[in-house]
Image (tube, rainbow, N blue to C red; front, side, top):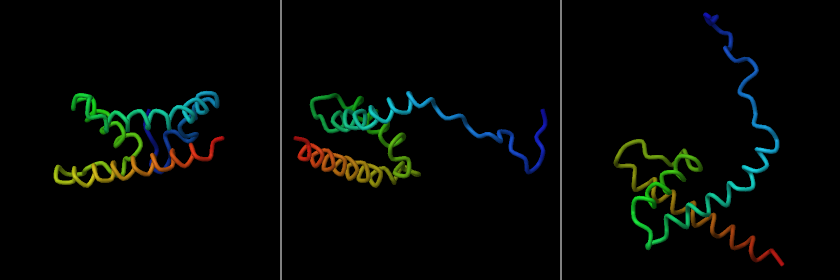
Length: 99
């Protein structure tokens, strides 16, 4: 199959996940992020899993914070810490709103 210049090879675009899957993912996404953030901050856990959790957060939830060069790691980790602190503050505010 040859592609014609200026014409999309996939005009319909990528198919969306079924509604049920999107609902489940929307529900577990924040819980997963909180679990990973807790893992990153848990000093009792070995460094390897903590680094993998931080990497997962950077890749999945903060793609714009990924280091472009090795010197950017500190900036990426600062962005990660800032995001975790913001998520915790929002979570604490949500807990206060719950009866």
